Image (cartoon, rainbow, N blue to C red; front, side, top):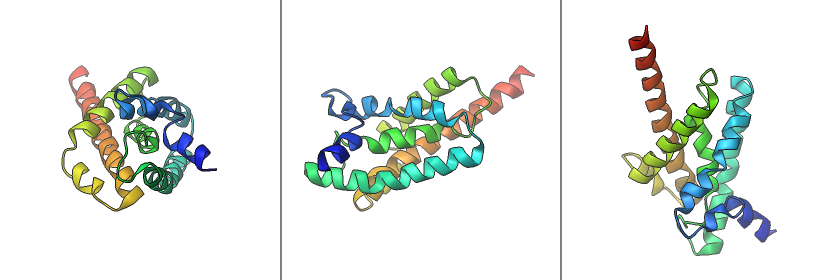
Length: 155
């Protein structure tokens, strides 16, 4: 059972990459977001919240099994949080939206702007997942502002 949970926590093994495991792990968020964007807002957000809640113990135990802390191979937090960057915008062309959401999510996750670094210090899986959720919220806000400005200046 531990092997299966570690496989999920490592993003089906993508988090085992020696280069940028968080970025590789986040790639799983793209098809997840694509799939979620098909559904109503209630279903999209319900599934997203359930995945975030499930990722907390998955990341917590996975990190403990690998030595503790936010271990690089544990990327379930990235792939469940990344879709949050785009779920509020189902009306936008999907591929450009997904590329922008992915890029902005990774940027904010790497930069660790406040309060990303602060929530990362929360205990165990909560902190491991919370910093990625905040990074995804930042990405979603930038996308929303950009779309608003685009519509304003295009009209």
